[in-house]
Length: 377
Image (cartoon, rainbow, N blue to C red; front, side):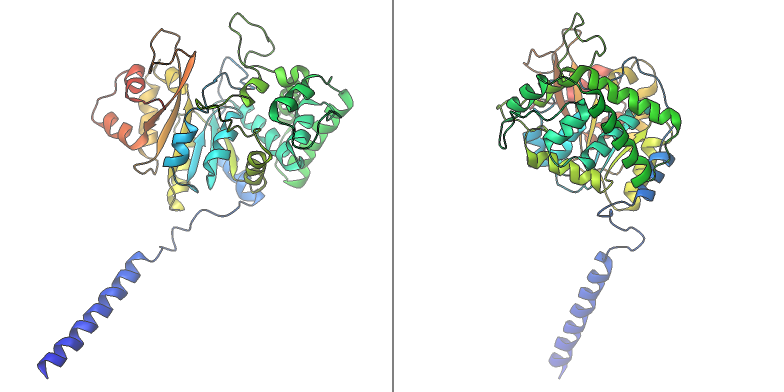
């Protein structure tokens, strides 16, 4: 009798314990997961409400000047989970990381309002273009070359577009289609100055074509920068091209993110008190964390004042895990190399969680402290 009661009691305890575990691990309804797509209203609310006042930088930054930005992709693809949050800065090199990492949401933050508008231009172009050739045709205001055939490689694609002259009618039609998509389809509240900036940006790409460079309009400065086509033809250290233009599949991956409003450009200072913290709060509210944070070489400028401390305080408030990683660009302007590479710039990785611990332990004092702790692929 007592043995039977003991068995019954044991089963009852086990059932209660299992029920308790079930209750404990049930998702908290106050922390809904990231939405599969964002409405136009939610997207625009974040663009406007997360943003800070625009600031100044000395260059338009129409395209990147980093040539080794793909070198870290093989390691990131193996290490990082999909469906997290990607944070980035600057122009379209972010799209290559998005195509490789497949985040659930991405925030592109830059101190310049022009960069936010550049990304809105790209958003419209992705949405209204069915293929890479249509995208390039609208971006550069050039007809799709008749010589192109389905299945032509990327080098052939850029050679063909490079031989085409810009067409003022096609360029104007493309700009009007961009503005129609943003204003009439999405109903984004862009004022006259915003429209003028988008036209200025688009005209730069039309004027220079696939040869547009970081230094535009000075295309051939004393230090020759890579062109848009050069950057799209770059590879990792093993010769594999991961760019968002490398294949129709990569292009469609970014188009899909853009069409679902999951690439959100905001105006923000890394050291500011609003933008980065707003992103952090949003991710916490949705039970998500930062997978990768591409900072380019912004930290170099932050260390020229006390702003680097403000930035790392902001980073300390972001939801991260042990795999969350910074992607840094380091320019070897001072003859100091982070690895054996002699490239003008190197792309480096650093664990966000580990960096935060080091910062709070007062182990970070200079820009080279974070470079020395970063690793190259």
